[in-house]
Structure formats: structure tokens, C-alpha cells
Image (cartoon, rainbow, N blue to C red; front, side, top):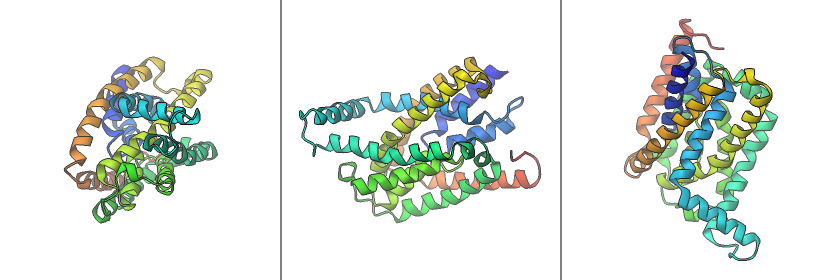
Length: 277
């Protein structure tokens, strides 16, 4: 049963990681609803997210490899420091600092209190509304090439909110990007780039911790690895679909979905159908 649950959770992780609907919230909810399952935990979530971030690296390989090469080239004086790719490298570094600090400072809250389904349901609704307002009111004029260091840091600060299940990493960063006036594809692409070091860092850290504490991997290593591979395969398809969708459509369907899911979850919790912790 653990293998089947792992595959289902892997599909869910890959399908929801890049959409602004919170993959961690869906994994948390699925852990309560799937027969024989339970909350997969922060460790399982962080490890399977490695699969989805590998999908990002594969999909945007040309962009990411070029940015890395030019950034290192600028350190050796071979590439101009004002090169757009060099600037993007620094933007990703600056934008990643806030979530690294928050991840270290709030480790206990991330693993325990913040995983309450009451919190998850509430932030699904609240940040769904925020996403809708930012998407609707955003000026939609800035491109990825015009990203400033101030904007990069602000979007990085928004990424910190993703530590709370239900907020959504892509939802928080994209909302901030839209609020700052960036086009949907530009906001989404920077969100993808920004997530890579943060998610890889968290995933590798949790993997190292799990090696010394195997009990922290609730489903076991075998199922967790399978879930990570499944998340990668599904994630590739979802990235391709999402980038095509946002080039012509709004985030409204995701806003409606978030609010509806949060409302249903609140009803289920109030009625005692599922346990909040």
C-alpha cells in the first residue's frame, strides 16, 4: 500500500508544485484522505520536491546553464558585470537569502504547528484572494530583463511565505511579481528560477537528516524515491502546460479553486470529518 500511496503523492506533487495552489497543502490533505495514509510530513515533501525542481532545471536548461556560466564568468572578469544573465544570477542569490534564513529560524514551526489543517485551509482562501487581486490589478508592463534588485528581494521575501502549507511558493512569488507590475510569464519564470536553489537546498538538507533519522521518512526510502521520480515526470508536463496557459489566460481558475478547496476543508474540519493535526 505504501508504494501505491507514494505514486499517488508523487503525481500530486508533480501536478501541484508549479501551479499557485500549494503542493504542500495537497500532500497534507491527501495524507488525511487516502486509505491507510497519514500526513507524509515535511521531510517527505521536501525530498519529493527535488524531483519537481529537477524538472525545472531540465525544462529551462538553456536559460539556467547560460546564467550560471555567465555568472561565474563575471567573477573571473570574462563577462561584463552588467550582462542581463549575470544580473539574473545575482537576483536569484539575493532572492534566496530570506527563505534560507527563515527555514533555519523557524524549523520547529515548519515541522509542527504550521502543518495544522486549520492554517492550511485559511491561507488557501486568503492567499487565493491576494493572488486574484494582484493578477487583476497588476500593471503587466515589466519584463524579466527589467527586474531590479529591489523587486528581486521583495519576491524573495514573498517566497518565505511558502514555508506555510497552503500559501504556495509559486502563488506567493507570482502574486508579488504581479503586484510589482510584471507580466505573467515574467513573474512565473522568475518564480521558477528562484525556487531552484531554495528547494534543492531544503531537499538535500532533509535528505541528509533522514539518512541519520530514517524514521522521519514516513513512507520509507523506497516509496519516497519512487514518488520523487513520479513528481519529476509529471512536473515536466505541468511546466510546459502552465507556461503556455499563462501567456494567454489569467490566474482566475486557480483563485476559484483555492477558495473552494479552502472552504470545503474548513467545513470538513468543523464537522470533525478530518483531524486538523
